[in-house]
Length: 367
Ligand code: SF4
Image (cartoon, rainbow, N blue to C red; front, side, top):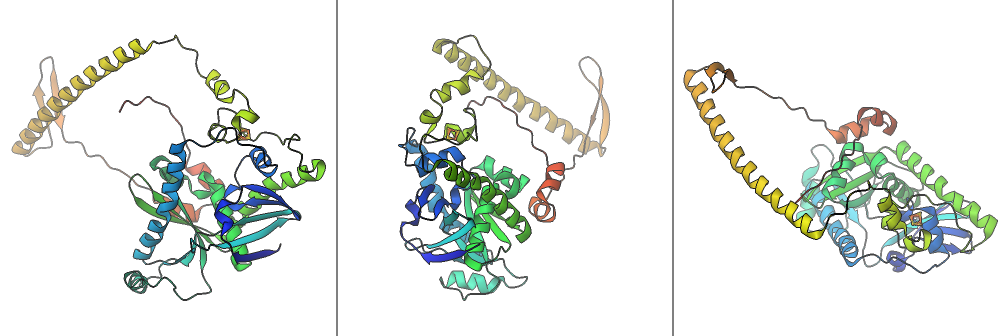
């Protein structure tokens, strides 16, 4: 495996995949992308579904918030050296013969040492952007996620929720240090504006890298068989109902009518007119209003009963209701919390999958 690191200005605008003299080059942040989409990009096919302005705004907001995460880490005692945004360092790793993966690390650094926070805080306060290099620096991959994705990452761990980000960080570690060290995934919740981190041990990071690069190696074989033929398409990695396809810039080319097919999977239902929907919404609002007022009444009654019990100095008592005698009592509830950061560090992703399971439910929200 050969690696290189150099400064480059065009790194942010590079395509997700491109053919070079030596074979195929994949952008590190695109390691998890659909291989057919990568093929469309590498063969320079025109985009049929450009991103909506809102998606671009979201993307730009995420990028703009990355320095915020770096500053928050420093305030928490981390030693962090962020990438120079005007002249980012580009690393390139040869994943296999004919396959390179290239990208730019967000930052490097290391977690606070026990009792060592003041030095880092001082560095933040006095604006020293060039902390001295240390041999134990780790790659820090900075991500911004919406509340749901943040919760998912924290609960399941990066290797299960976003394995491509672990592979990406491992790639940078190989490129920068010539070895796969532990990697840090630092994530900002864009809703609550809080951040957290996960340190993925070197062995597991390397495994994520091997899995990701093995997956894209299939494109090198495909290239060997067909050359850069835009019509010799690799198999699809996703189906029309997957979010990857719904956001794919080649959706209409790959699956003409794809969005429609996804809708076809939905339960057939009686057509509802706009007027019927408005009527249903008005009924919903009225019922919500009644529920809120009933809930307020219920809270008031419960408070009176609680004061009555406290006045008697008991935790439980019997009292005649309108139809029967009821027991009124204080019930203790206990909550247990799991430190997912520690759990993720202790357990392999496969073990975590047995412990932390995921259920997806769907409901309609009116806001
Ligand atoms: S539409 Fe879906 S399957 Fe087709 S290239 Fe895009 S992500 Fe891949």
